[in-house]
Image 1 (tube, helix red, strand yellow):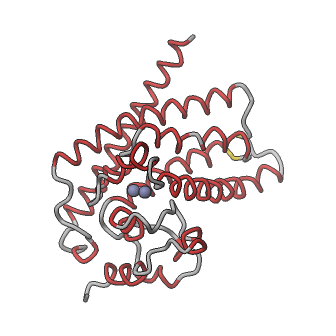
Image 2: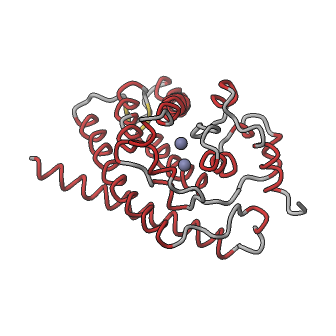
Length: 255
Ligand SMILES: [Zn+2]
Ligand SMILES: [Zn+2]
């Protein structure tokens, strides 16, 4: 029985880790190498991780992928045992309403959980033991996306089984949210601003966290603790004062 679960954790680990390698590699190759000249003004730094940094990030990400896989299988187990609110069919109005409401609640709950756990991880004594591994990448790369200490990976992953037990979500919506988590982590660490300049003027969208926002966090750790949205940083006064100007500078080719 145990061997059965170990097999599935191993299989899911391969999926998560290979997806991470392909996704980060492709993102780096296309945006930073292929389109380098067109996007030059959007790239924060050229000395992207000396080989040693990227190697360290990938090694750490392998352990993190294994932890994420274990939690992924835990979600599957909970589903099998009927302990989750995940569903597969759209049989009534309730299922249709939760198709949108579920992911929305998930994102807001994860944002809140992450913002406060992240602030806690920056406390002296905790930082050194749990969060410093992630911050060793000051000039972040697409591979920094999963580069965490195992304890931090557990703290992040524990949200997943909790969320599926509490929030009703369509299984495909939940899978989409997992893909968004990876996509957002890659975008935020790749060292290149990909959001259009006009987004800073569009309501709601202007509150999304992108590469400029999170890059500031790696360089000035007392600002920008959010995950997907900036609202907690704005409410708690932890948003970098220079963020809007920095975003304008990196999205305008003339500057
Ligand atoms: Zn980061
Ligand atoms: Zn941090």
